[in-house]
Amino acid sequence: MPRMGRVLLPNYPHHVVQRGHNRQVVFAEEADFRRYLDDLRELKTLFDVRLHAYCLMTNHVHLLLSPGEAVVGMGQLMKALAARATRYRNKLEGRSGTLWESRYKSSPVQTEQYLLACSRYIELNPVRACMVSTPDDYQWSSYRQRIGIEAVQWIDYDPCYLGLAHTEIERRQLYRRYILEAIPDKELELIRQAVQRGQLTGNDRFIDEVESILGRRVEFRAQGRPAKCGDKA
Image (tube, rainbow, N blue to C red; front, top):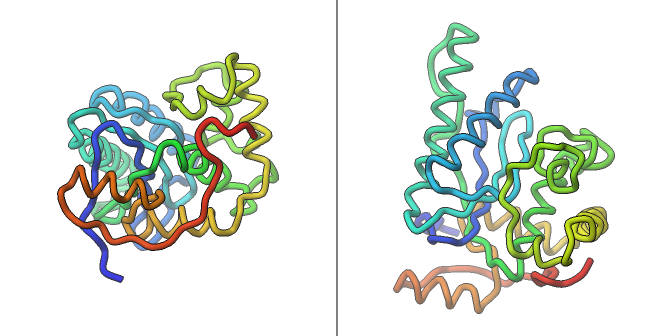
């Protein structure tokens, strides 16, 4: 199936994946992870991009980003993050060349149907990779911020998470219960394939909405149904 041109939508969440060149390791030491997160925290504000979830794996990153009215901010953010990490690694190792694949992958996400599902998918990456038994144990994802294990919280809470309950304590309890549920196979495959192919993570109504915004047809495929925004876990 041919890949459609990259779709970037103002004020919509996008699931973003960037991998190391030839799947090489990009985070070898704790300092590598910390430097990338420090840059992410700084640059998301600079480029007016909201960060809803993240997970840094050894050779790739998952981000859930919402650009503002200027959608170019997301591309600028990804370019700056990649450039800083590359300069750091090249200087550290006395080498030159690229660290990342040239093109990051992205998929606009339908907020009310798939936003919580994408957050769960991202934050469970190290569990699926058998690196940890629970997401609480992985230091390099947004999950520990979200449920209050880490005192400093700098991710941007999305409307679906905020809509889970009226208080933060209740939201954390419900989200913890939700993320520990088994992800349906159809949902898992939908999210994975959508970002790999640069398609939309959403249903037919979302496709119609995006086509109306873009003024052109967007090819897509059938999908399953995850929990809606506001559904209680």
